[in-house]
Length: 314
Ligand code: NDP
Ligand code: OXD
Image (cartoon, rainbow, N blue to C red; front, top):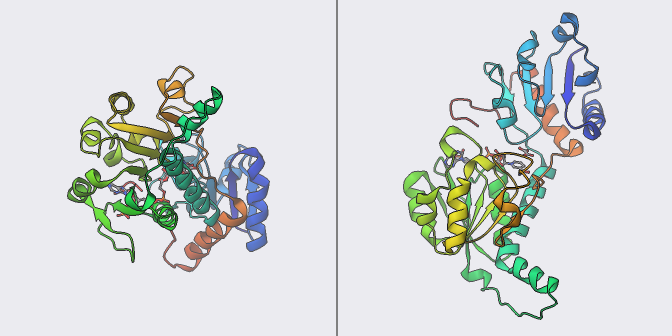
């Protein structure tokens, strides 16, 4: 019997095991915590469904054939210098995660657009302070990273009435959303956007994508929603842009260091909303379909869904 080990937060492990057993009762799904340390136990593992595995753990499984990331992001794996990159690895694609991300991005853009922070401050001081938001149809949102999550978030924002455009690494097309790619595409798109939603993955190419030069090329007062990864933003540059007015506000879910240190200026900044990496979660009940699809594809020699290409970093 093939075996998959499951490592995720304690409250989710049993739900993953049920989700896998429902679809493939012939696979033994075991919590990582119950695997044991013997060579025999490690040799019995065929597949691994993991979130933040201990460095070196995956490399210690001699018969491992497939790694499935619990998250859409991969930095929890690439932090491991011994990650067995020769093995097929698949990113998470989960309708529940995608829906959550669309909700978060819509909420983040609306929070900035509808001046939610000043309104809350007015309430706190008991002030009846009327503020007016610009018309959404005259407001352009650029989604940086137009993959599984970015494309759905862009469509949700478009459904709310915003003009939406997207940016990706490779040139792509969408029926109703103009798309840009590469450095030239970014240069063309940036000055036209009132808000930017960040949904590119953390790779060497995207490290500090949002730096002083990038921010200077944006429309003055640009609002930033970062649901991708903290490494995308040079924090000093963003803080400077927020203080000078070049950036109008930021909704930030992900940070270089998590939890965000208690003395970080973002916490108290009057133009920043901080959320604790909660933009979107993977749900075993819906994500289980993807895990089993990946195993089925591996076993039957079909192309794997959401297979990671380590040469491009995601
Ligand atoms: P995908 O791989 O489907 O999409 C990534 C997108 O980013 C693609 O459009 C890709 O371009 C683009 N991209 C990658 N590198 C570059 C680059 N150098 N320049 C321009 N575009 C680039 O990933 P997902 O949509 O599934 O996930 C995106 C990210 O969201 C994850 O990596 C993770 O960091 C984050 N995330 C955050 C969560 C949270 O709770 N905060 C929850 C889940 C995910 P192309 O289309 O050409 O490949
Ligand atoms: C993910 C995340 O990558 O939750 O899925 O951040």
